[in-house]
Length: 160
Ligand SMILES: [Zn+2]
Image 1 (tube, rainbow, N blue to C red):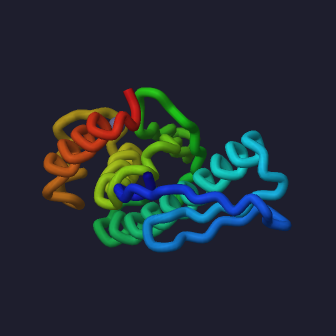
Image 2: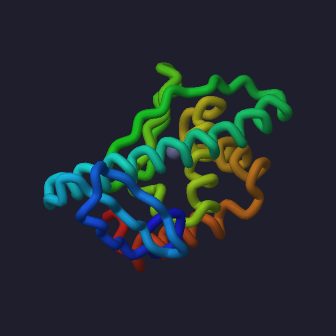
């Protein structure tokens, strides 16, 4: 599962090194050595790199919009963890955002929405009305996206 799309994984066990190419909706994984352990580690690392790339791109899309609207939001440090319950967290005093590794499995609109949510905490720390007004000023349809994310997570047992 990646950005809301389902992929199957096919193995090329006779490779000379680890590698991965995406062909239509198949992840073709080359492994050397072709062990379960190597497969698990390689795929986990690949997922993590995809997540970092995807989340950083979302942050880079939102930040100029905050600046345009007159808010000073720093480019945060980003940490990625596989979390059970939360999609993300903003440590606004530390300039740090943590995001759930599993978020990369969800549709792009959901990723954008969660990244926006965490960045908004640099302006309003709590979940007050002012916070939701701020989110809404950037993403008027956030309630629908929020519902979409919850439905997706339930349907695909992503977290929880
Ligand atoms: Zn929040």
